[in-house]
Image (cartoon, helix red, strand yellow):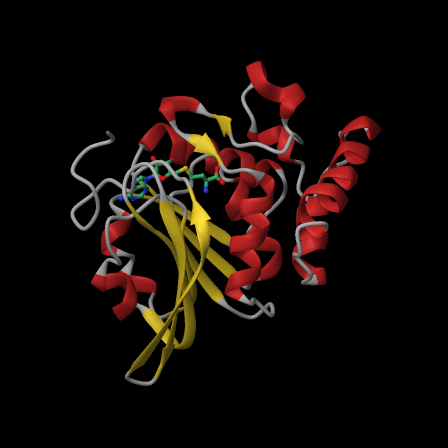
Length: 222
Ligand code: SAH
């Protein structure tokens, strides 16, 4: 990935972030730690908040949306258990930061975003980093993206009222879906693994995401 223009200062901040916010909280997968240590998060944060890019917090992006807290990105990514050869679907491209991490850990990443302007700037950021194994699609991700299914990993980065059935349908056998499920103000990070006809569900902990808005999500943003 092309990060030649990066000041050393950001690199130091990013290393500290990985140590103190992510490794310290129990994320162990070395590939995940390396990807988070590589992607220049400050390029995904709006100018007004750039100096806080490596802080232990989510940050506002355009259109009233957010870029998730670094630890949450790492935690959710680890839960997908990617080895490198997977085709992954993300719902909620937002800034594109989570997608950039996934691009380093999987073979190909489709990321769906309902807001066209966000999708466009996410695509430009990912291209700007020299990444080529992704496609940003504008649409309602509660329907998934059937044309490229099945996916070995699906990650939803917005809070859902329930698990959209079409996402389960588009999950490959042995694949994992990571999704925050709950109310608009608090969700439980839920993992569903597909094993033949069986779905194995585990609840990993609480989290707070902006609402998943769409046919199989919430009707509106709040
Ligand atoms: N993954 C992002 C953060 C996501 S914030 C990042 O790394 O920056 C949640 C995003 O989900 C928002 O951009 C919101 O517009 C989008 N979203 C909400 N409902 C959606 C839906 N039904 N389909 C696609 N995107 C959706």
